[in-house]
View 1 (cartoon, one colour):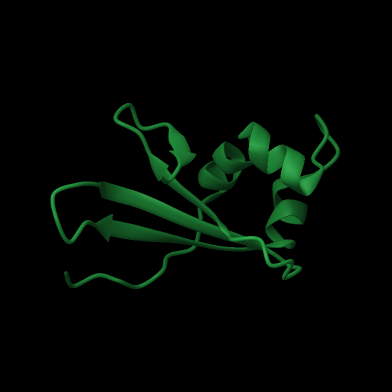
View 2 (cartoon, rainbow, N blue to C red; view 1 turned 180 degrees about the vertical axis):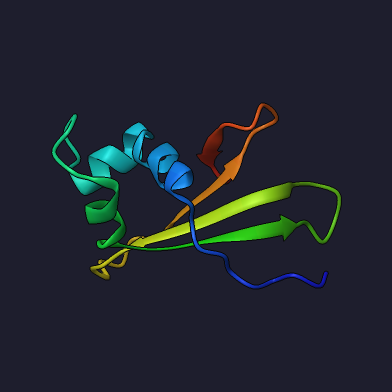
Amino acid sequence: MEDTKPYPLTKAEWKEIMAIPAIRESWGIDSSDMTLEEFADQVYAAKFKFVSGSPGYVGDLFILQGDALTGDAPFVLRRDDKGKLIFAA
């Protein structure tokens, strides 16, 4: 495995993440009250080009942490077989 560095999220990825109900609820995002830029200013986020060390997942892996350390684990997202972002198991 050669590429373990984090990558910044694109605007399309931020938009996709903001559409996830659990993310919206966690950050208190109403239907139109927060822009992508405002959300990105409150979140530490990175995308990895993940390759499983054993048979399993290969693809995008996102890790998101809010700007407050509450003791809750960061959000970890990956893509399902159809390309939709879901919570990593």
